[in-house]
Length: 128
Image (cartoon, rainbow, N blue to C red; front, side, top):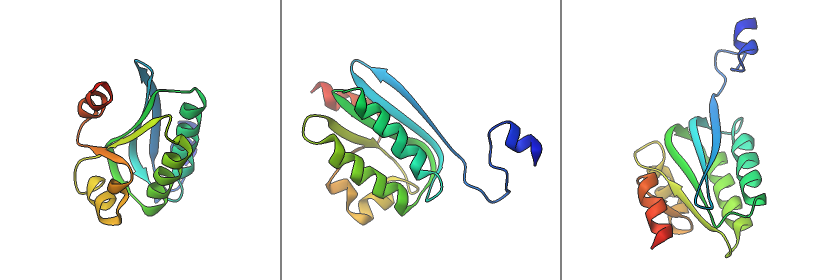
């Protein structure tokens, strides 16, 4: 237990793991997420998106390429972030597969947020 806590991973065996990293490409903030986005980890995603939006990007791309599970709490963060971005900041999500794009489509979020199967396609859409 001490080893897990020391390296920053969850201390309990059933806990959720989520890593969030931000990088920039030509004024576009890319928030790359991996692991599980659920009730426990969605605040981490929300914080990263808020930090990116505060820096006034031309667009924000949430990259869920390496997300293994996306719960409703994570989807709620996306909708709220889309609303925060407003019309001045283009907001899109990279999601492909049953763990991410399928739930986003089923719940109707894909009708609100632009959804792309790859980061390259999301970035290309911003240049179009």
